[in-house]
Length: 264
Ligand code: PEP
Ligand code: MN
Image (cartoon, rainbow, N blue to C red; front, top):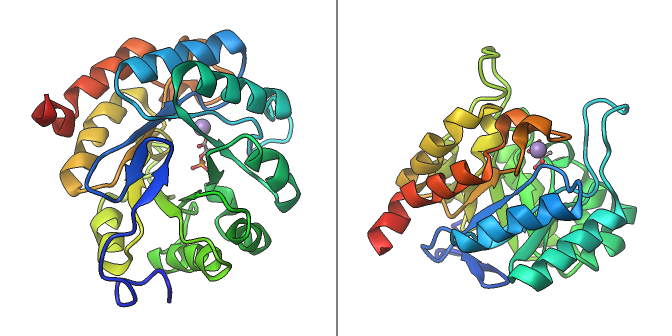
């Protein structure tokens, strides 16, 4: 398999904007679950840029469990992301849910996110192999590490070597947290593949209070970066408010990351 360490011993370094995933640094991706408005997005972007984050995330096309929940602003959301990139110099990450939306999303995004629910959408993965943009591939809700690697292989086998893997928690029996963060998956995947592996403690736990401690765990375990949700007013967020840091909590979390303390 192309993703295997046996094929390539050295880490792959995936560059997105100013950030490099896989070179021993720890780029931080942050932003709201969904793009809601210009004010909301710019407030996030300003806090992220000021605290040393490199990428702004925000869903414009949202994979919601219920079809009656907010589905995202669509192209208007993509335009707001592009505006934030211009103003704050952050690269942007947003989800692409289907093959036919690739040209539209690729026209705006620097990094194309494949959500957990789409990890085994092979048509989408094949097409992203040919789309010419780096891909952030989230682990499926109950995907084994082998299945996750095979999903990445679809993208590489179709011509795109720039894949970042994201551990975002898996289904288990205890509903105290939304999912269970499989922290062991990080070094386990890094043994098997040369691709960078990052951690998303927001979707892994569903709980704001657990994000900062697990972000520190991600550094300790050797992850290649972090993805967290933040929002200027989490209690009134249109999606995933309970797992979103407010902007002060986000700044605080950034200050507590061991890699940043050591650099300072
Ligand atoms: C998201 O990043 O907002 C998201 C929907 O994530 P996941 O696909 O991991 O549930
Ligand atoms: Mn979310």
